[in-house]
Image 1: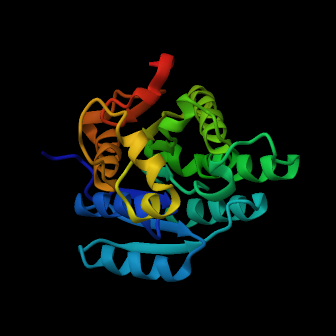
Image 2 (image 1 turned 135 degrees about the vertical axis):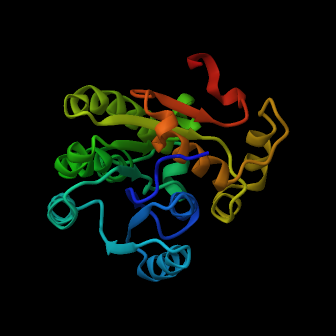
Length: 253
């Protein structure tokens, strides 16, 4: 199937490893050129080498998404250097450690730091790149989580907030012909999930799926490719679940 992505320009935050890297590789396999953003310089070097081996261009940028002025300067540079940007994948975020625990003990400072990275930075970056996305009549995909549907942790709250921001972005950016969607991955069998989640939690959440499947980063990456393809052009202002029908969807779905 011709996805229409050959030669397109795709920017992936958190692209040095894990799900972001899988997403970048999936687009590269369709012939898209990549811009990878992360704070992990060695991971960026490794991922970009793997992508270039597929015969496409890949540039990398180290960026701290907690610093507003750095985000704006980076966005201005991309708009100047490239003119048009077809796809922005807001994948970078915090997922493990304190943010994945109960939130009643968290200070205001902690809340603001978590919300800055997971919820607000995607909006700030989207705004900074809006001129380039507008020229391409492009697409923004915000990386949410099924945890947004049962926000019992700070992580879930930040992703529920991101979902609301996604709807707001779709309403605002649509005036420039830019689509905005979010993807809610379910539990994935990745090294990061295995290391970051207690075995009991991983097994319990996976056991709530309606289908006995082991989700992978590639499953989620393939969904991103479809949403960005010409076949997905009519999908907008949506939060798309990819979780094998996990019961954690709760009453919201």
